[in-house]
Length: 200
Ligand SMILES: Cc1cc2nc3c(=O)[nH]c(=O)nc-3n(C[C@H](O)[C@H](O)[C@H](O)COP(=O)(O)O)c2cc1C
Image (cartoon, rainbow, N blue to C red; front, top):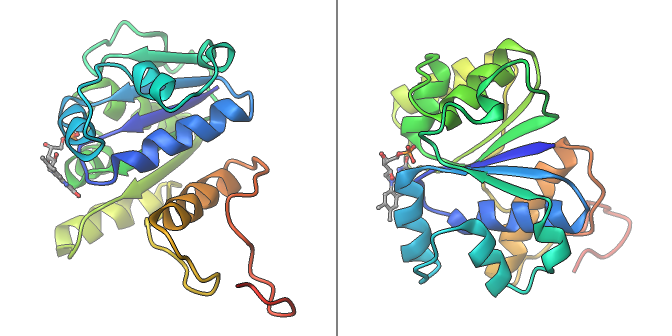
């Protein structure tokens, strides 16, 4: 089971697309969306949805796949994933706000998202963080350095230009594909670098 946390940084579509891809790969997904993230999701995706399931239904994800998705409120410390004794394969925070990065870096487990990240670090499980801010202050960079030192994979949501992205979807698929690479999940979301073939 993979936990996907969406926080209130710009780029909510990255989290939605990752959940979509994981479900298409028949993975079980637990999703936690922060309160700020709901404001950003509704603004950036121009929706008034209140659940990720509702958003994915609108994006034509099949009902049988949606059965593999569980959603928990960020206030729900009684959720199974709030305990280190509950197993999960990996946690991904995508996109990650600088506030959430600060909380992870300093073990300040104020909501279920921070708590899940705290557990991933203390239990030595896979933690992937996709931070979104620009420019970054020394405080942001210091916090990212701290979580990287503790074993987190920090994936900046940056496109590669060597595979000639043409649409925003190309850029989104590249970032989501790089996260899937770290989760060891096969996909065809982007063309891999191969300088012997024409990548266009
Ligand atoms: C439209 C919008 C875009 C935002 N984009 C970012 C961003 O890219 N990075 C960031 O760190 N905060 C961003 N924020 C601010 C966060 O939402 C805010 O710091 C919030 O407290 C984060 O809380 P959370 O980490 O619990 O979701 C944005 C806020 C709004 C309304």
